[in-house]
Image 1 (tube, rainbow, N blue to C red):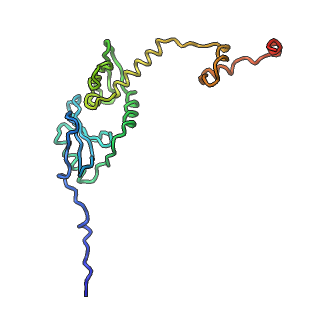
Image 2: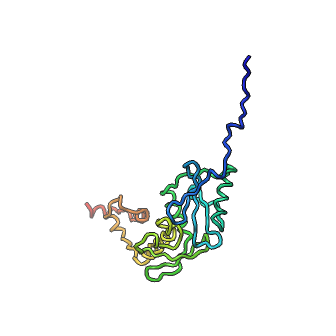
Image 3: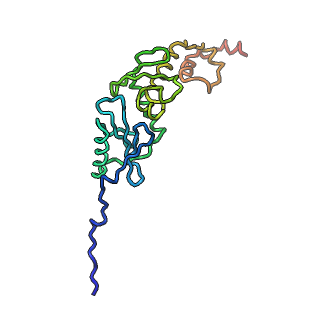
Length: 213
């Protein structure tokens, strides 16, 4: 008589090991990817402007941990991986990151301008950076790590663009058209403000209608 073998469910549970995690230098500028079996589980970068905790871990473009030493950051990623508490990493969406930079640019103060150089204050980390928007080298247009290592338009550059745009609006006087002039503009070209003004245009009187006839 044949007996049914007892299956131990524990034998089918994959035991996570810290040695499964490897770190790959992706650009030679202290930016690493934490990889397990060819799949990126986190990113590790160095912020040279943060002297206390320059190494930071991010998942899906969101910073989740900082440390003073590279080994501390890598050990943290490994421990989170083994514990199964590391959030699943999603490929970075360029459009989403750009939107985040535009939003965070609103927290940046432009303090000084010296020719083509602008001194800005990052209210999130209380750091100061010099922005050079006309520099020919994209990774030299700001001192922040985002610009220097990724050669992208960072939130500090966007803040300077906003600053210059606002100053330009103040410098150019706004031309206010008369109600008669507004009547000559095609309806689809009128702004909401101009439509509101036209509502106050006097209705034609009977004498005006006779003259027009």
